[in-house]
Image 1 (cartoon, rainbow, N blue to C red):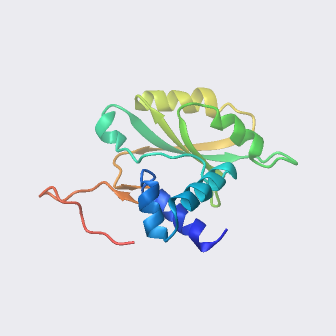
Image 2 (cartoon, one colour):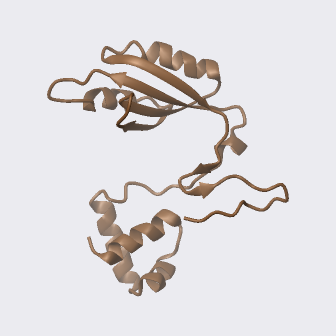
Length: 163
């Protein structure tokens, strides 16, 4: 992967709706070359999907998000992969990551209520054979997500920030 591909990925990550023309201008390439590179990155699974960052707290005022941490007994020859594959099939699991620290897996889960989150953990996650411990944290407010700042000042202007 060369510098142009890396720059293209950065631009698409910032705004995936940027036109081929604008991408070509920013990269100093032709639209055809940008389209070819973009298609190649998609074909090779580097670009997995295009999406928008949506402030769901404003859309789904009744929804609840929770971070669930799991201690898991790894499986011989498979580690955490099989249990992660099982957990990832639940529709309300938005993110699932293996991580270092006191817990092995971190889930971001969406529910209609705290009771729904609690039931999901109690009925679907905790009873799984390799799960040793669960810790659930309810998300109360999102300030920043995927590099997008959600917080505004009292006068309606976004708070200043830098990368």
